[in-house]
Amino acid sequence: MHTLNISIYTLAFLIILALAFDFMNGFHDAANAIATVVSTGVLKPSSAVALAAFFNFVAIAVFQLKVAATVGKGTIDPAVVDHYVIFGGLTGAIAWNFLTWYYGIPSSSSHALIGGLVGAAVAKAGTSSLISSGLIKTISFIVLSPLLGLLFGSLMMLIVSWMFVRSTPQRVDKWFRRMQLVSASMYSLGHGGNDAQKTMGIIWMLLIVAGVTTANDPLPVWVIVSCYVAIGLGTLFGGWRIVKTMGQKITKLKPVGGFCAETGGAITLFLATGLGIPVSTTHTITGAIVGVGSSRKMSAVRWGVAGNIVWAWIFTIPASAFMAAIAWWVGQQFL
Image (cartoon, rainbow, N blue to C red; front, side, top):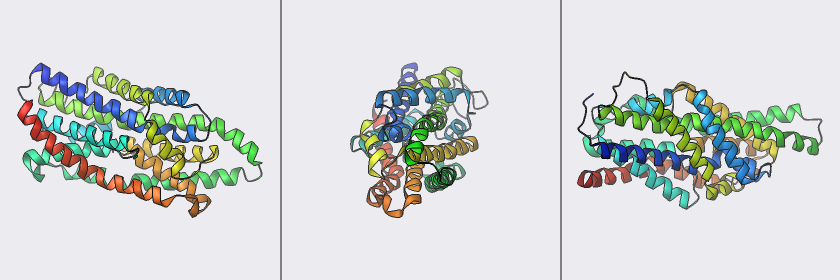
């Protein structure tokens, strides 16, 4: 790995930009963890974001840094990485996140980041700069994570329906209002574990090319802590536009449905984080909500809304890659 002569100011600026992306990720994806709890009336929005932010940070003690290693060393050739590529990748991802947040579209911060890195790397050195194994793993989970969410969400719904078949609707509702607090916490834990590590991977990449650390050194503790703090703060400030889409527009959820969707989503996130795969928390929870809705009856899902969300998923990587390529060129002129 070559090292670059980067000024301390440029390095600090890019670390702050990476943490801004991390904050935006929490802000943008807060809805994924709390939409179901808020829409079913279990928690007030302010309490729900506080709970989610707390568990975002607690992930620091639970997960290994496998996702950070995939993003930092497994998506684009380290020899191509310089501060222009990182600037382009982060700017492209932030721009796409802001755009989709503004219009209330639950797109993926993860894939915006991967798309951003790909766009900036290709703008600099062509497609040979991409590491196909890491990208194939990430791109295949664009399809697999919502399908796994759907599978686990509908399975949970079927198991719960079977277990509580003799209970009254009031009793089920009362029980699952409490259980939703557990499922929302688990989902937030998975969100923090997978998503904060993506920013760690970027800062890791940056520190390596700046010669501050080497590829064989462990990730500095201050990077780990600051990334978990940034995503937790982002969640605390919450993305309310998206809460509405996730909580009510795809399908109407009762507490039992919210519990099943979050638990199904959390299982998927824990699985992916354990395997070191950066997945989209947005795709995962959407799949789980659709799974819960369709396990009741197919018409319970508003397929038009779900379809619009899928289009946003398809466009995320190419759109953020395009924005990142432009940002890479701008960075070359001014950084």
